[in-house]
Structure formats: C-alpha cells, structure tokens
Image (cartoon, rainbow, N blue to C red; front, top):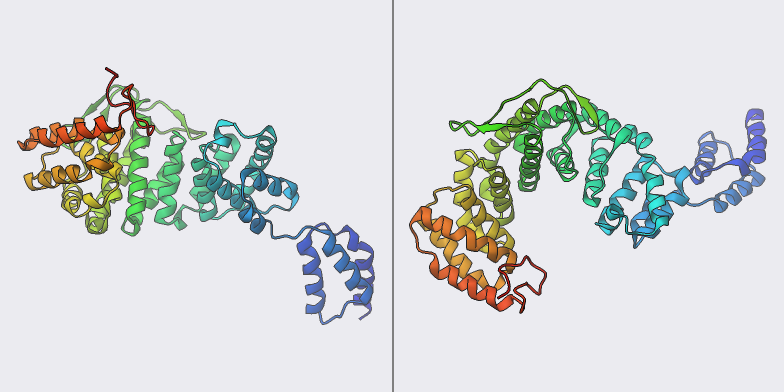
Amino acid sequence: EQVMEALDAQLLLKAEEIEKYKMVSTCTWALRQLDYEPSTDLLHALYQRKTALPERRIAERIIKSPDVSSTLRIATENLQMLSSKDVVTCINHLSKLDQRGLRDRTVSYEDLDRFDLISSLFPMVIPRLDGAGLVILAHSLAKLGIPLEGEALDVWGERIVSVSGSLSAEDVSKSLWSYAMWRMTPSRDVLEALTARGSAIAVTFNSHDYTNTFWACSVLNRNLLQTAAPVTTNSMDGTLEISGDQNAAASYGGEESLASPAELMGMIRGLRRALQRTAAAAAHDFGAKPVARILWSFAKDGTAPVEPLMDALLSRMPQVINEGKPNDIALMIWSLAKLRHEIDPKLMDVIVTTCIDNAPNFFSRELRTLQWALPVLGKTTGIQVSNVVDILQERASEIMGPDGSDPSGGVQLYPAA
C-alpha cells in the first residue's frame, strides 16, 4: 500500500508530462488492475491531461477526411503519434482521393512538403509491417503513380522476402502489379520470393489475381527485354533465347542484383506456367473482363497462352463477350488478331454479331481497334466481315467532329478531310 501511495504521488507530479493520449488511459487501467483506487487528485490530473491531448484514433480521422489536404494535415499534425498502421492508412486513403496530383506535383507546395515528410518515415515504418501492410503500402503508392525509392525500397524488399511465406495470392499479384506500374524490375531476391510463393499457391488465385499477375508479368518481361538484346524466339515452345552477356550483373528495383535478365525472365516464365495450369481449370468462372485482360496480356508479349488455357478462354468467350464493356470486347478481338490465332467459325459468328449489336456503344478507341482486328480474323477464318466493318465506319462517322476527332475525348480515328 505504501508503494502504491508513493506511485500515486509521483504520477500526480508527472501527469502533465505524459505526451500521449493512450498512455493516460493505460495508466488509469493499470492502476485499477493492481486493485488500487487512484486518489481523487490523481484522477482529476489524469482527466485534465487526457482532455488536453489529441485523441489517439488518428486512423479514423484520416479515413473520414474528404480531401488530400486534410488527410495530409491530420497526419503531419500528429506525426509523433503515428503508428506504422497509421502511415499505411494515410497512404491508402490518399490513393483513393488522388490519382495524379501528388505524382505530377500539381497540388500545393504545402501538401507536397507534408507528403514528403510522411514519406520520410517509410524506412522506419516498413520493418514493423506485416505482409498485408507491406502490400497495401506498395499498392497504394503504385495507384498514386509514386514509386518506393532508395532506402525505403531496399527495406521493403528485405521485409517482403522475410514474410513471403505468409503472402496470399492477392498479396503476390498486387506486389508484382506495383512493380509493373512503377516500370521497375524487382531485385533478384524479391522476384524469386514472389514468383516462388505465387507458384506454390497458384490454385488459390481468383480471376482478379490472375488478371493482375499476367499483366504484371507481361510488363516486367518487356522491361527485361529492353535490357537484353538481341532476343530470339524458340519456335518450338515460344520461349525466349537471349544472346549476349548473360552473366553481367544489373541493378533492378533499387538493389544490386547478380541475376542476369535471362535468369529473371526465367522466374517470370516459371510463375506464368504455374498460373496458366490453374487458370485453365478456373476459367469457367471468368467474366468478360478477366478473359479480355488475360488474352491482352499475352498478346502484348506476342506469345499465346498454353493450349489448355487458350482453349478454356475461347470456350468462355461466347458466354461472356456480349456482357463485356465496349473496351473488353475490343480487347478480346484485338488479342486474337494480334496472336494470329485460328478460331472456330462459330466463335467468329458470335464476334461479328456482338460487334453489330454493340456498335452504338463503341467510341473511337474501340472502333479503330476493331477496324484493324476484324479483317485479320476474317482472313484467318474465311468469314466475310465487310458488313460489320461498314457498320462500324458509320458509327465512326456519327461520333467524329468536323476535324475528324472524337468529341468525347477518344483517340482520333482518321485524319480530317
């Protein structure tokens, strides 16, 4: 009892020095856990201190903030109290409010300074995050168009490798998607960890995870191709053979990597092979968007999916193509034409009918794509497409302005007369 009375007296003297709201509540709780009822003077002092401090629930205030400026102001005014999760919450909320201002640095100088201040915390915050927190941070920054750089990127890479065994399919897909959005190749250790984890849990991927990952693999593959030339294609299996110095070390993703572009591309191919096997089995549940985006990812690389996946996607197309948005329809058709894939005449009939039915919904971007792709597919199938091309040309004439441009802001389809 004497010890507790002495502690009560010391706390009374020190109450005004407590710096955090949460510590006041913790102090009161701890005393009661010790079966000690604090003196009236101490309770009054703790109450006074509590009301003088800002409430700890910073994350809740951040989530409720309506714009970029207020979000950054709340975070920076409570900088000393921010937890690692608060920092992640702040960046994630910013990614929902702002898509270009911070990236293009068109927001106020004050907001830029505040964002830079929060970013300076990344090297200290990242080591305390779990896998989900790491992915949310990277994914949110990628949506903002702002890459992790320097020390922050190195620390993020080390941390994601250490927790890679706990990553979900969504975590793997979003991590690779983030690197692709940054136009940055992961370091060898990071890429090896992510691709190995993705291959191990491939069966747990859903349509969205497949879409993101196949697209990211396509982008990363093209990035690596730019650093490894000349490149030839093995006609037997479609794999890439790179000549030149394959042992040269290169720096990727902010860290020095001893892996050659060929080795990194091999990791990407390994993940794509694993995912193609499981995606083929899951394709019967894919909607129009996943079918379109997966085909598009492979078409951008100029390499067709393995036969089981291609067959599964082509079998799914007649069921979903008419449900897709105009852009999805155009992507499916463009991808098949780009791959020069021989399709069943019955599927071609479905494609022609869909284009005619959706002609009023197409704008210049889709029209230009279809006017190139349909004749290519018509040639491979022997089906006449001149009728549908004429209908699309009529639609183009309807939406073009007097200068030949699309008033809706789409891509110019043909030059002005």
